Length: 191
Image 1: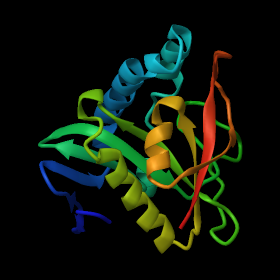
Image 2: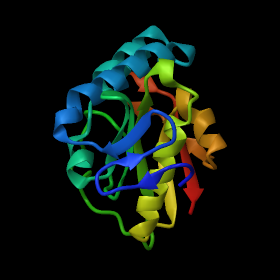
Image 3: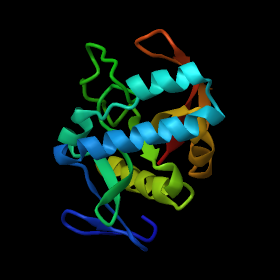
Image 4: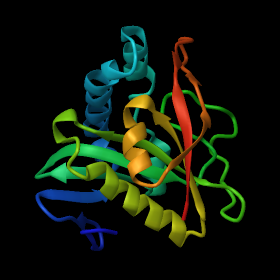
């Protein structure tokens, strides 16, 4: 898992960053990171309407991931500067939309686990935070028997996922609740 070592509740990392499981007390901080990331990094790849819609509908912490213990926060001191996780459930991406079978469990013998809701504050980008979260998620999913991971990448995150070994599978546009379409890419990695 790179430079991190695992402790009972906190995963201490090299430097000033710590990764730990998210709790419901972290929801406001997670939402802040998600929205700030979308607000600052989104305009490089999406128009103003897409950015505003993504802030409203994608920038929503997923309580199910927190309850499942598969979502993590990255702390710089006591400040959340990054977040992300993985899921053993059918819902493929972050956001407020919900389908009737989103909570169904995936079968590790045939399904890919989902990497979900990866965000870093823009001023902390390119410091390895996303990679550390991905490595943790990959290890945890593998420990539960998953052999593949999939994610729906926002255009702003695609390059980081490529560098971490994820390959594009298909264009996978996401239609948000207000009808705005976000161009995204379905990506996959074999463990």
